[in-house]
Length: 160
Image (cartoon, rainbow, N blue to C red; front, top):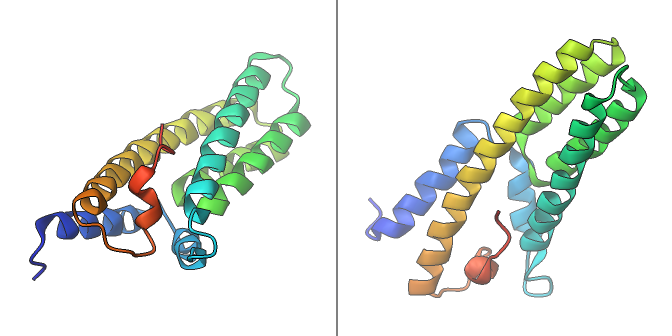
């Protein structure tokens, strides 16, 4: 049994992100790529994801307001969004991106709108869960400053 309750909470929160299907093995790979030579790697990737994805969500929303739908443009935006989501291991967001693209390919505008609403919901949920996780992570390493693969998050301003 873990003696440090904050460390235990952190481990449970992190595992829940995987168990609930919000993150996949790509996130672990990002953590493994981080080292002393590149100590801000995960932070940079996550920062880039949120910056790029917010811009892409806005573009998709604007494109969905225009009728008739330009399915090629929508698919292109979603292709970029899916790639960004894949880069951090955002599993549920990536799955919704795939569904959206399937609707684009079949010319199903209503399906695109529904899939996009679900995608935004999964995106917001992941955002909240990661924010809570990184807050606990920050607190843990602020009070227990040990050097691990996560130490770069001590000054994490990435999230939201």
